[in-house]
Image 1 (cartoon, rainbow, N blue to C red):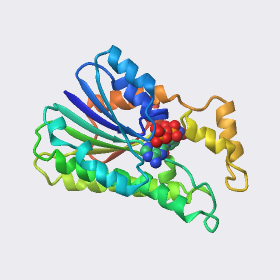
Image 2 (cartoon, helix red, strand yellow):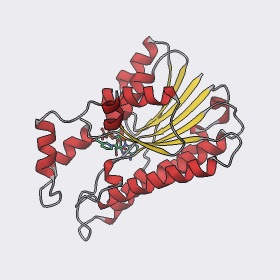
Image 3 (cartoon, rainbow, N blue to C red):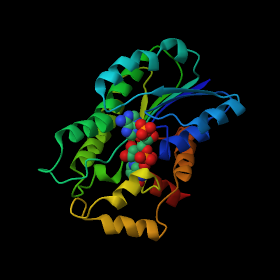
Image 4 (cartoon, rainbow, N blue to C red):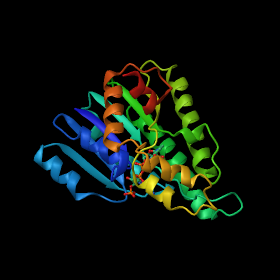
Length: 254
Ligand SMILES: NC(=O)c1ccc[n+]([C@@H]2O[C@H](COP(=O)([O-])OP(=O)(O)OC[C@H]3O[C@@H](n4cnc5c(N)ncnc54)[C@H](OP(=O)(O)O)[C@@H]3O)[C@@H](O)[C@H]2O)c1
């Protein structure tokens, strides 16, 4: 059994990942606040194992309470391969520092940085005695490397997440049976996140027109294409532990 835990599974890139992975021999454990009915119907049709955990990952008390169920050893022990894909993410607050709602700032860092670190921590602990290959994928962004006005929370959280990925890889290189970690930057993808950006007032997001032009000029990748490339890359199992890969580079090469 190949077990995959995917956060942010209800729409966008996460949902596309779930749709690609739903099938025989795979157990997909989905995390998000909403639970789309269509995914369950497809899983039933394919007799695939799909379970949903409805969870607000920006509420760290909820996350801590859910960890024992999510990483229940009895559901993982028959795995021949295990992936944790930390995909859930949010851009808001898109505001300049000084105008940010503190609660929104807290939700951003909790969801984009704290929750993936808590999940990775629990994943490493819960699977430490398993012999199968184990991988943690953290979905990153070009914003981890480049400051963008209005995106201080998002840029900081994604930069932190890239460092958390590298630290995990370094620590695991000291272990006999290392977990492997990967940062994956998906490029610019046609999801609700981009829709929200195009609606953000210019005074909060000075690059708004550029992002509207990306959409008008057909420069956005589809979530389906991004999911397919990521899964193919993971299945090839040839990446260096701690690597950062970008969807655009992978598709340029081949
Ligand atoms: N789209 C892009 O251009 C782009 C570019 C670079 C990086 N990324 C990254 O790619 C990842 C996926 O983004 P996307 O574009 O697919 O965004 P999206 O369409 O807005 O989907 C976001 C997903 O995260 C989940 N999520 C949001 N808040 C949550 C919460 N509080 N608790 C649990 N789940 C929550 C949502 O589920 P619920 O609302 O049901 O909870 C949804 O499934 C993110 O990490 C994002 O930073 C995207």
